[in-house]
Length: 197
Image 1 (cartoon, rainbow, N blue to C red):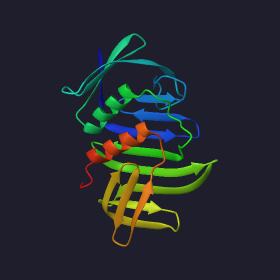
Image 2: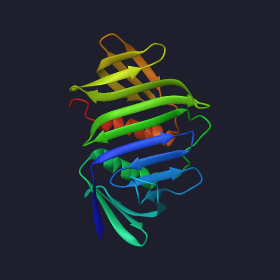
Image 3: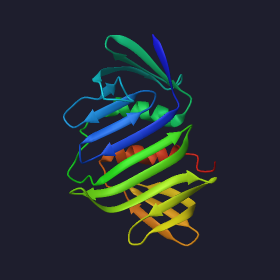
Image 4: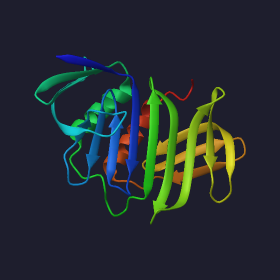
């Protein structure tokens, strides 16, 4: 039985192509109308195959799955990866709904937020966007609408589907337009992230 350690976590959601990618030890892809698949070639041309989720052990922090008749155990010591395992096992609905506007790119390493990029896209036109990232020993936010700002973040939280950000000069909110499962996962992820560094 092969064991793979999950350290980094990536969630990439693109409503324009109805695709959700979660990388947590392995690269999982969910497309509308399809079951979750695994990408056997995550760094090149995708090679998707079916995956069967067998068991989740929250005490040992493992997810056991079967890929091409081979059992794989994903292990982690990080909460975000454990939450992603639970999210993958519980995902029942399609990734697309008529309300989805936000493209989401979330990257977390060792339970520390590296970046969160959100962009509201309608008919392939960006309506609004926000970027949160770690640089020079602090978190920054970049917002383009209604005017460009790049400021250090003092406080950040999420409530339901709204991200609240406070900087030295501004306070603003960004409403994330996505389906309920992804919104719920974002809320859980934000609650786990160590923003103190």
